[in-house]
Amino acid sequence: MCGRFVATSPPDQIAAYFGAEIAVETLGENFNVAPTHDVYGVVAPKGGDADSTPRLEAFHWGLIPSWAKDRKIASRMINARSETLAEKPAFKGLFKKKRLLIPMDGFYEWKVGTAVGPLTAKGKPAKQPMFIHRSDDEPLAVAGLWSAWKDTDAPPDENGVPRWLHSATVVTTAANETMAPVHDRMPVLVPRSRWVEWLDPGNDDIESLSTLFDMSADRSLEMYPVSTDVNSVRNNTPELIDEIDPLSPASTSLF
Image (cartoon, rainbow, N blue to C red; front, top):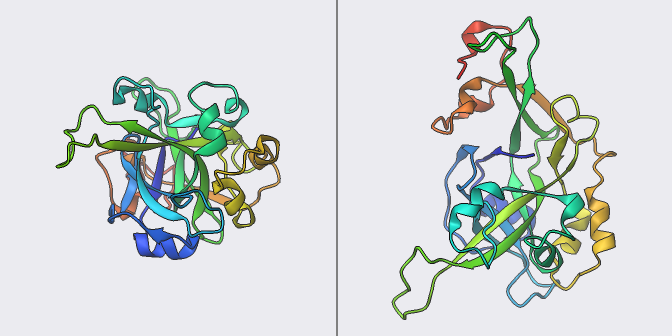
């Protein structure tokens, strides 16, 4: 799965990297992005013209389907399994028409420790957070789906028009060789050569799109251990992505 990530680049830098136009105010640096936070997303331009410039917008992380009664469902829909996108009612329509790319500097995953490392209060090996990023430090272009939901919690605008909340989920797949020692799942990373294909709402070739979900040949990632301070969403500082010695008690504050 993907439950925390890092997004620190300003919107102008992200837009330049993805060749997108900015349609969002800055969300600020976030070294500990968690579910229900707002995140950047690159989507097809309005009108769906694949040859036009994509847009950089803001999305609530945690999908809220158009039929949801309230936003509570979002916390349970931060990830979507690639294997069932074409089957699950909440995802199959979005898979055909509402795909996006979620820019990330990297993401966190928790690896079960060993008996020689720090222990929890119950005497079990602690889970060691790892920071996973591209070895060339380029941004990750993570596959996602998005939805528009009539926000029943927000008052209408000055013209009486209901407000819409855009939300997103991260598409995950089976872990590749790099990720397998840490977790059995990982985000789907879309290569630059296929960004247009993934974003194009006119492209409903599910068979072709599904070939993106095989990450077995990807060798772009590397990882290292970081402080367990990342376990708390209250912590949000650059030090969270500093590499640490997991066997050093001074580098770990267990929760």
